[in-house]
Image (tube, rainbow, N blue to C red; front, side, top):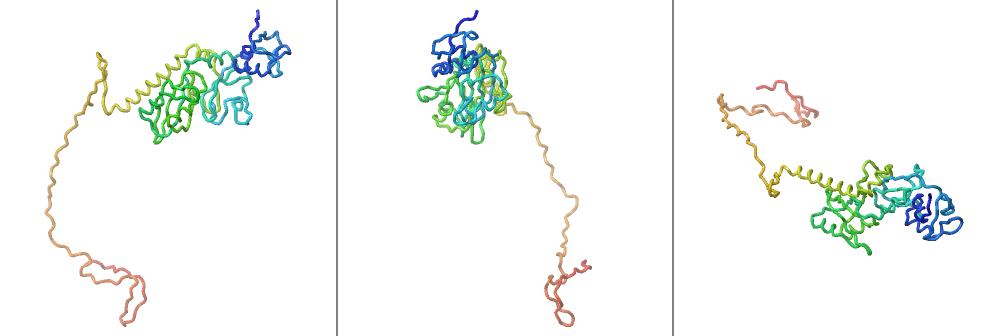
Length: 343
């Protein structure tokens, strides 16, 4: 037997908006029940009462849809924008269900954002403070251990304290660094302001994961459908996201150890667990064979040779003036070499 429910819950189940947004619609007077403007706290029964939102009759709830979308940079995290900026709806033309975004990303940020028509799921996900959000931040310069600690302490942005769960350097380029920053909770964190407040110049921010779901296989402007079991796992098993992060950190440490293994070998003592350093073992190299002095088998030639060109009559240069037997100057021209040049 159907029972009456609060209007904001009915709107959320029907995929109109999240529960908080549904409350705003009720307060704005856009929701009516049986022709009467509804108020917060009113109840109704879907299918029995005529519930309208902005003049449109509310139909029965659709099957839940969950989308993982890669929001590009320069796109606002809304479906409609009064300033005619690019919105999420521009990339969802093939989605027939009425979906809405869960949370938001800054206009100049990019990365993972969920869209759904399941209002209850959106409301629960927004209230959870144990689900990690992973951001990859590209900053100018290189970070030392002290700078990482400075980021780890967080900063107060406005009237809210933003403190990362973890901070680590992922990759260093010639003059830039990729930093992985993890935030627990779903509040609208201004990551860029926090990092710039610590003295870093931010060039790019990408949200790479929410819980255990990542951007893997997606490119900016594309999305993939999620199974309901995947969406439920976000709420039922939030530890999966942290476990995935720990596995990535272990893999990075192992790769770093393999790169430095040529410098020194490190072993773990079986009893105390202390790290002992052992010098690398040098291989025996064969001794070089002694060189034998070279001996000459033929005596050196000591006779002097006549220098090349000695005793040869001098020849005028090409282009110089010549005289014939009568003493007259001959026309200038190239001198042909003599054929008999042996002496």
